[in-house]
Amino acid sequence: MASEEESAVKEPLDLIRLSLDERIYVKLRSDRELRGKLHAYDQHLNMILGDVEEIVTTVEIDDETYEEIVRATRRTVPFLFVRGDGVILVSPPLRTA
Image (cartoon, rainbow, N blue to C red):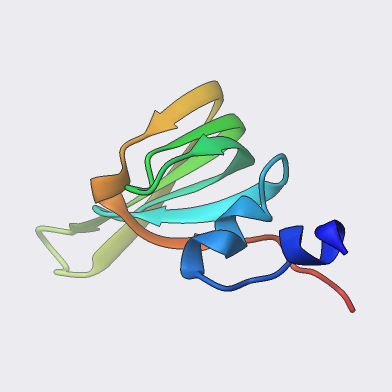
């Protein structure tokens, strides 16, 4: 019966608790995205992620043609501390029934 209570979702942060030690997707302010393994978090959504892939999207406007040029810069980081005030969205891994 205790395992049913541990896997129950009663509050929004319970979804994040169930995602510990799994890969999650985090969208941040200023067009940054992270995918990594969730090691720890707190009520402010400060997080420690491991094996992180960071994607930074920038949009530039060509001076001559006025067309938008979209660039995505990727990097990998072994461990990353994410400050919660920059978090917009946290997506847990997909679960199949």
